Length: 423
Image 1 (cartoon, rainbow, N blue to C red):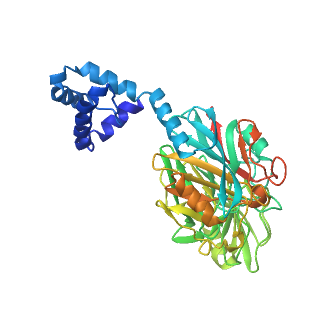
Image 2 (image 1 turned 90 degrees about the vertical axis):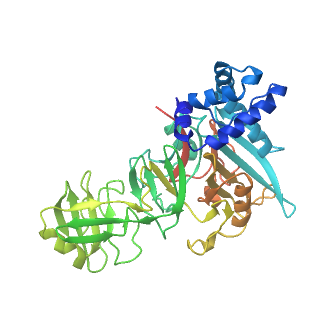
Image 3 (image 1 turned 45 degrees about the vertical axis):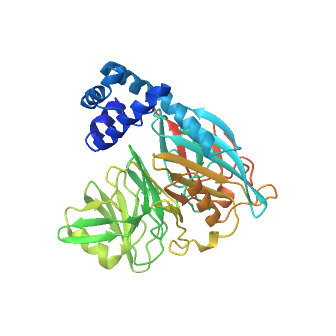
C-alpha cells in the first residue's frame, strides 16, 4: 500500500527519472540485474514495455522485477548493507526489523572514545513508535526513575536519556510534548526535535501562547516551568502538581476551568482538573476576572502543524547537513570540554539516530561538542542536536543498559526518548 501511494505521489515529478531507469534496465539486462529506487505506475510500465520491446520484456515481467526488488526484504537488505558500510569495524546487532545497535570505538588525539549508536529505519520499523516518555509514565513531570524502568513501562526496545531536567525534582527544562500534549515549555528558545507521522524536523522553539478574554489578550511566557523573571506570566497544570507555586512580588493568580475563571488570589491556588492556574503580574491578570469567558491558547513557534511529539535539548550539532554548534546562543557555555554525551539526529531518508558517548575514564575520555557534531555528520545526520549528558548519559537496548554510565545502570532521570512497540 505504501509503495503504490509513493508511486502515485511522485509519478509526475519523477517522469524524467523514470526515463533514466528504463535506459538503465536495457543496459543491466546483460547481467540480469535490476536496481530500481522507486516503483512505477501502470502507465509508466507500459511506456517501459514499449521501450524494451526488442528484448521481449512484458509489462508483467517488468512489474514482477520491480515489486521483487522493492519488497520489504530488499529494503531490509539494503538497510543492512548501508549499516555495514557506514560503521566499519563495529559490533552490529539487529534489535528488531529496521532497528540496529552499533558499538564502536573511535580515537581522538590518540585517546579512545567508546560510542553506542541505535539507528532506526522508520519505514521498516513500522511496528514501533519513536517518542519521549516521562519517568512517571505521564502522571506528573516531577519524577525520576532509571532508564530501564522508563523503557519497560513504555514497552520499548531502545531508549536514551532525554532533555535537561531539574535535579531536585525531575522537572524537564525545555519543551516536551507527548501525543500532542505540551507538558513543559522551552528554556532560552533552545533547539528541539519535532516528531511527525512521516518524519522529523529540528528548530529553535519559542512558546507562543495567550489568554484571551473579551478584547484583551495576555501573553503566556511558559508552561510548567520554574519562574525566571517576576514579570513572566506562567501557566500550570496538574502535571506540575495540585498547587501552583507562590506568586511573585506584585503577583496574582487565576484558576481557569472550562473557559471560566473559577478562583483568583494573591496566594497559591489549587490547580483544577483539566484546567490551569495562571500566575503573573497583578496588573495583567486581575482585569481578566471581570470577563465571563476566557480562552487559553497554547502553541509554539514554529507552529509545526501535525507534530505529535517534541523533545528539546541543545545546542545544535548539525544544521542543514553542516556542523553548527551554537553553545553561546543557547546559553550552554557550561557544558564544554570532553564529557559523556547523548545526541539525536536524523538522515535525509528519515532514519533516526540515537548516540551515547562514554567519558571521564581512561578507556573512554568523552567528546567535545564539536567532536560530537562532526561524528553525527559523518554518520549521515542532516540535522542533529545534543541532549542532556554527563552523568545522565545512558542507553538502553533490548533489556539492558549497553553503555557504561558513571553510576551502574544510570542515574534516575526525568525523561527519555524511546523506541516503543505500538499497541
